[in-house]
Length: 439
Image (cartoon, rainbow, N blue to C red; front, side):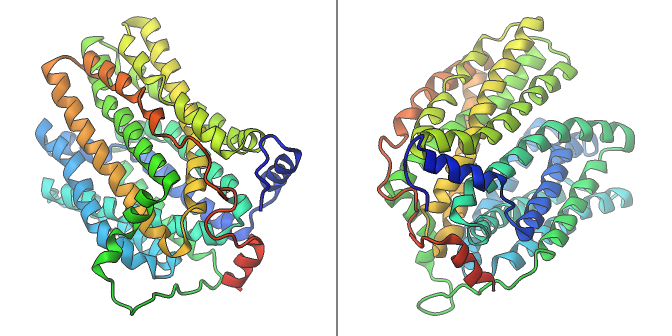
């Protein structure tokens, strides 16, 4: 257990050792599986809307429906699924979710080759992928908590975070080139294969995983479905961070389509500059994620959550002042870089705290509730942002979003939770706990 001494030599030494120490063969396989699927998803970013436009000549309303209906249906299906996953071995669930995404994505190039591809199929694929993504993410979070020592959780989450941002930086430009060279379904094939490789990597982790025990019978009870939200909303620290995250992520994501209209439409940015404006700042994701363990060791978890959680909210308003030309391009890159550095530093710290403060028998449902709430908030705020932009202008809507997000730090927890460093389970020796579960 790490002594909660902000800037203390003991804590800094422990985090330094944790960062240098290998997290084990099983974690390396889990990380490799995550990396291959992350790069596959980055390579196939935006593939379904692209196919809808280029192949099916879909209308703007259909493209919007594809972006909203599929994830919404997926979230509804994932809601009861989270309770079922909670009391199953997590590794087989992760493999099944990867294989489900592999199979359903592969139906698109097959239907395209046969001349049978339709819009309804894209909706079904979008819903299945969204469901599997939520279930996989929740199961993998629970599996990670059991796989690594509590002291190593931040290091592990930081490695996942750096992989995510490198995939976002490299994947979309390469995917766009692949579409130009090999056709509209090329990136879908690559994304599907990445899930197959991920499933093989998770299978290679090996070891015995203990079957979670359910109290009160084997059947899923109706009340269990809401246990994740109960935990989030009754835990003082998690409640504050959950509400803060909903507002921040919702407003940031709501500005993305508005910024596209502003840059590509009103300001006349060429597509290559638009892509550059979002690809270059992703380098900041590598910077922030690599700083996470160092700044937590120096300043403490709570201070970083408060400080960086505030910093990530102050930059968005700068996008409302973007002008045409090189100066405007530099403004977008600078603002996005600041946002991404802040987010990539904050995200692994938040993910670690969330796992620390959630009991083992409620991790899946808590992460499922978090994902569903985040997806729903993004959808609602994006729709409201679009309506407001239609009445006013994209620039005005971005300005309002930037001003609203400035209030989000008020939702951050003002003082650390008692015993936050050790989490809710206080089992002390994480290595012994891991050995008991996987022996």
